[in-house]
Amino acid sequence: MKILNFASLLSLQNPALAEGFKSAEILSVSPLQDANLPGELIKCEIGAQSFVLALICASFCDEPYFAELDLEYLSGESSVGEEEIEQIAEFLRGGCDALLIDDALIKTHPDAENIKAFLSLIAAKFGVKILSLRGERADLGAQGQANLSPLKEPENFDGAVVFKHDADERLIGGRYFCMVAKIKGGDRVRIKTPHLNLEKEFILDEELKGTIALLGSGGQGFGGYNFELAEISKV
Image (cartoon, rainbow, N blue to C red; front, side):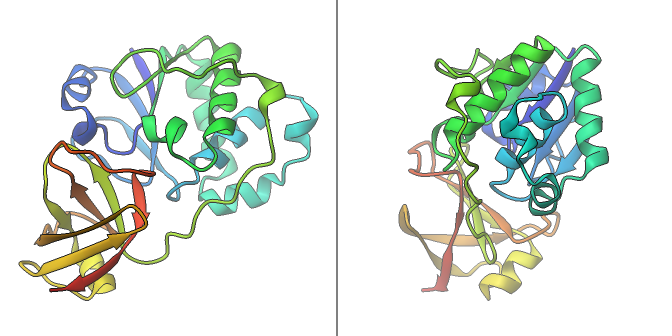
């Protein structure tokens, strides 16, 4: 089985599904490295998956919408180059069975409607199933080329970022997150974003790279897109 994976951190978001894919050939596109998932990672900027999907569609679709895109700009902003887009397209052409999409990308991402339209075009071109994080067919609605609109700029994620999930209730980050947030392991901190305001003990994990921390809701769920720029302060 071949899976093109657009889940942000599948082994945390759906451990059972990740375990079921252990023997699959997986190519992942995400801002986060999933150490518990096999295969290669093409790392993209947070929120720029819409740009990556647009670049994929532009590689095979001759609609005027794609001809008018500034591909060089989209590539630079997403940190996914021409060779990587060709690698993804080749993966799709080579008998890819499914594209796994992060639910947040088609529900709470600012450019969710374009993302759904791009996914519909990819499914039609390559005959791949578009699956949600539950392993079921994703609901893309009645999408098509007519639903395409100007791409929205990704939000600014310069600073301390939290990735929200439901697997546990901990706040875990690496050394770079500590530096940006000006905290250390064991600190009690307040996390403020447009969608939440809460206190947690910060747990330092030296294995985590970058300025993204993992923030668990304990199964309660969080509103908004699953990546947010956060204001972190000691309490």
